Length: 279
Image 1: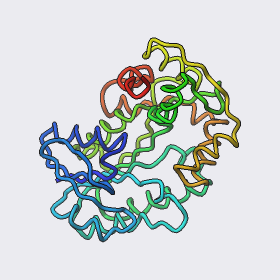
Image 2: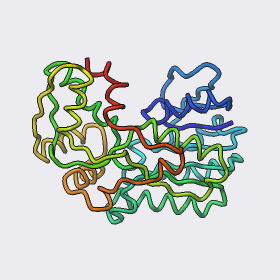
Image 3: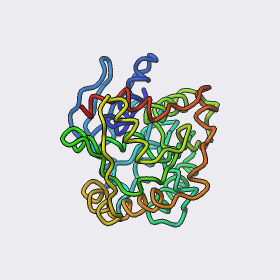
C-alpha cells in the first residue's frame, strides 16, 4: 500500500493515478471527500492532526508527503507526520520539499523545510527528497481573469525561471516510491527552459487560439492576492524568487531526465493539456 497525501492537488492527483495504473494499492488522503480513480481508497484526514492519519497509514509501505499551505505556517509540526508514519510501519517516504532549501536557505519557510528534511534523513526510514522550483500550474491563478477578460495580471512580467509541469513531479515521485535505487536521492526538479510570465501568457493564448493581454502587477498587489491562499511569509519568499532569481534558480536541472529518462515537459505542453481551464 502506498499513501499519497495532497491527493486531490496538482501533484497528488496525477501521482495517485500513475500508481494505480501501475497496479499499486493506493490510499489517497485529502482533507475532504473527493473522487479518486477506481480501486483507490480515499481517507479524509488533516496533516495538522497526525494521529488522524493512523487509518490511512495502516498496512502502508510507502508515503508521499506533501504539506498543505498551513503546514508551512509558524507553529505547525510536520515532523509529527513522519513520526506517525514510522510508528505505523511505513518503510519509505518521498518528501515534496522546495528548491529554495538549497538556493535560499535562510528564509523562514526554507529553514522549516530543511529541518523537516533533516528529520526524515534521521528517521531510519528509506527516503527520497524532491525539490521543485516554480509550478506550471501556478498559471491557474490567472484562469478567472483569462476566461472573463482575456487578461493575465502578474508581477515581474519579463523575469523568468524554469518552471516545472506538476505531472513531471508526479512521475518522478512515482519512480522514487517504487524503485529502491532512488533511496537517499535529492532531486532538483525544473522545466526544460526559462520562461517569463509574459511568455506563459503567450503560450496560453496559443493554446486558446485567442489573444491574451498581459498586465504587470506591483509586488504589493501580487502579495495581497497571494496572501489570500498562503501564509504571508511564503508569499514573500515566492515573490523574492520570482522577482530576483539567483543563478541557481535560473539553472535547468538534469534531474527529471536522470530519473525519468526523458526531458521535462514544456510550459506549452502544460497549457495545451489544461486549456479547458482558461476557456
